[in-house]
Image 1 (cartoon, rainbow, N blue to C red):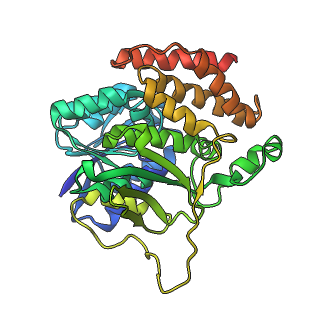
Image 2 (cartoon, one colour; image 1 turned 90 degrees about the vertical axis):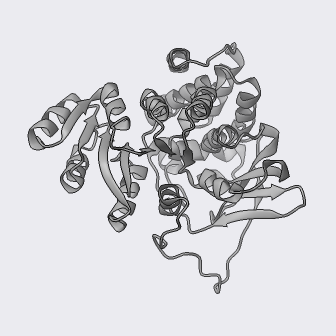
Length: 379
């Protein structure tokens, strides 16, 4: 039995994590839940169903109402509450499914207490890869990737000699604008951006997919997770999204992980490793005809992959700066303050102006985040 804390329980990954728990109540037990609080009805349903020992929410009104409705649950508030959930003594596995870096302090404390970390939050490693990696080594804490691409690479690399690996290959669906010309991309609307051809995701990550920033973040995350240089990691477009990650070896062999485009597969494996539980849904029917296509990323139209390589080469404060500036620019686009094509234009201008400095502590990471947000708001 694994005893779970879920940070971001009302988000897409959090809800699907709870779906897995429902299917295997003899394997997993929910001990702690944390939510931002913007969907209180879902959070309250989760508290009612799973009756966790401890829970936390960011919203003050939701917190007060939850304390009243669920007196048997130990309720906490804000950032301190997130840390209380992540470090609950009876928890042995923390699912980091919240977005952004608000969960970073809680994740750091969970690592120090040697909780196994199921990581679906790519921003944490983009902003604090050096800090998190060093702490995980120091405290001998396992970090298991939940993102489909990194989970696939993790499975491909299991029990393999890293010296035998030539490169890691991340796949990208291509988003809604794959194959579009620059002229066509000057006219896209918010509605166009949010119509992803494969995945159903939140607005921010859907915009990131359209600009390839999501893949850029994943490239940075892969480097920190697996210890490979940017020159040893590639991203390719695979519109069918059946292959989620590949590892190419020096002898020319390639191992890949294939499954239908559903997050249930990587979430379940991250929770159950080293066991393999019955599939969460039907797998690929290889008796049927399938087309597998692969294309290079157009880095002139989508320079975000180039930016990611720069982050990995220069390190320091650039990861946190890149992530925070992009978040603000995406918000400004969704608020109709800037056009879609301006997201990457402004992001590159901001990165060019940033003077990289050491950023190996929580305090410096948060300070860089604040600096980048202010600059991105004003450009």
